Length: 312
Length: 312
Image: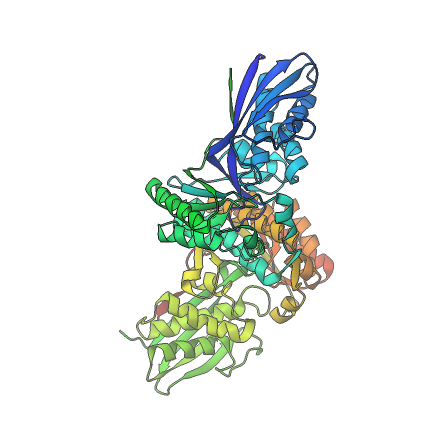
């Protein structure tokens, strides 16, 4: 079965979860990108429009994460005709919420659906990574949760290297995205090349505790373990305005932990109720108002499902 | 209630479980140390006898891990009389099976029991660590599983920093201890002081997978994750004769993973049945026979309970 047009949704993702640098990621219910794919007789990928990006993203499909992922799918399925993409960015760019991953995943899922879903999720992971690699490097810590949903442990770039971890049922989130961009390349450049063996021991211990907390559904333990990153956060903290203030304010409102989402500057607090998340969001707004820094603040929950599509 | 004499048993422990350097430990049903404690009117600790050590351990209670732990318990409870200890070493010394930890734990548990158990397990952990610190450094990765049983995640040296991880029900073990000593100090001296950030990412990922495998009871995954230590095993492999050969031979007999126990030279293979563990043990014997190296080979299972005592 082939379709005329398909719309796919892929969600924001919080990579790292603090201490799990480059290995953990969590899908969020909001925000999300929507990619609409329509068949066109000409081979290859055409980008009809991009909305929500303030004109910042390339409309050249060979330079755009959605375009690259779509082209990879077309090549994999040996399509004789092409697609036209319309990308609706719900995610802010360079904010640490996996914007490039969401667009790549939505495009891959949409194009695959348009042609009757010939590719499995492993192949869609590869296609999405092609798009992600062009913008943020070949890492699956955003792509994997965006595609598969939930919380993923990412040991590599193939589907066999992705493990789904349990999603605690009462996990609620508050997110604040201050209006500054932190390009992933810059956020990577500040990281140490080497770390003391003691830091390795500390970091492995906290990651072990984090996974244990997910399996036992112990959100207090989860929040504690997440925050105990002694390697990446200290190196990046100066790139993320308001980190200390937001963490303290969130904790005062009952947040169990606050971490930098991906490369930042988005901060993510975990809570055990919707009411707590709302209080924490209010506190985050107050912190950034005090700092005189515009910020987008929202509450959301983890998304247990990955990217979805529907025919239109 | 006070008793005339008490006998406590504390078990061998496999620290690290491969990739979990300094943070993981597992108690074994065998071998074990037995410490007998009897009251004596003179204050302090007297060591009446030590068996099974070929005369290698100090009989001076201030230089002996059991004596130091016992003295710490006496001080904590403010005892006005003393104890006489008889230490039966079931564990080989300097073999990577937590010999000093087992004696310290057994002594602490025995002396505490002798005086009616005034101390809780947190205080016994502190006392045991005093003994361990004198011989192997202040690490709880052997002491904690010896005291609490099962598989423990060790984030520090206090009871709140120890977490019990699930013990897969069908976990069977084969162990080979070649007749060479690897002093812990030497095994620590060969470790790198710094590791690349990439190694940190790899190691945290494998530890996360290991904890996930314990929670899901997936022994194949557990064995895979255990073996993927890219930091400590490569630095220590030359201290452990037969590692590569034993690992290959064990795998050929169905072992799911083989790691260095603690600082070595004991090697530990995990299996999913008693029959498999027996086959692996036979293969281990054959390897060391081929290498011309005497070795003690045994099969055992994890011990879900920690140190125990009985009045005698």
